[in-house]
Length: 200
Image 1 (cartoon, rainbow, N blue to C red):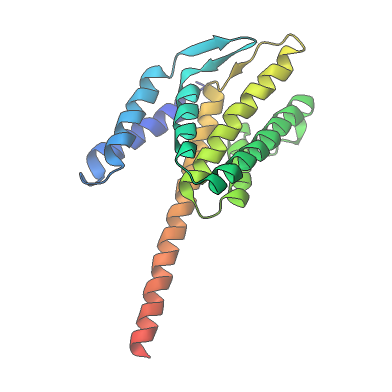
Image 2: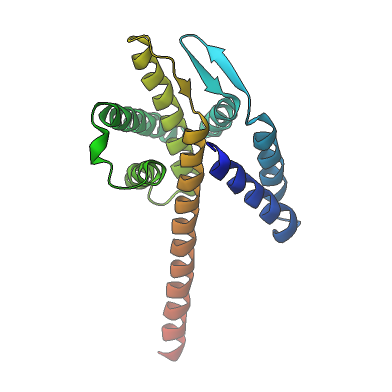
């Protein structure tokens, strides 16, 4: 069922935030609360001519632009440029699949998530939150642009459908895993460096 990976990811996030994260962790309540909100609103969509859009995507947009509003001016400008790059890349990718889907060598969801990760990794290799915000805002707006293009040929399109949300879940998993590995690697390198200095 489209969206099942997304729902599974949300339940996993809720369990981790509720039962495994330390009570003093500042991300514990927001993660648990937002996971439940996304699960509740998942089935609903809003019709905005010429397309419809899933409610979770609207919430993602709000959260993303609130985050951008608190960035310094120079970082805000770079983020907007990065989002435009993501919109262009993602929309172009969808149009290529529409015209010639044969070149897809992996599962559509996995390949799309990897592409999003790679583009965001070029733009934000060190900032997890900016990595996530750029990817989510760029692809959501890419979905909207793609839907508008399809409407010119009188095709109806549900932007940010369950399939898109599944892609987001896979992308989140890939990104969080990558940054976790980087964090562990950085800590190990730091400990080794400190150990060598002590012995030296």
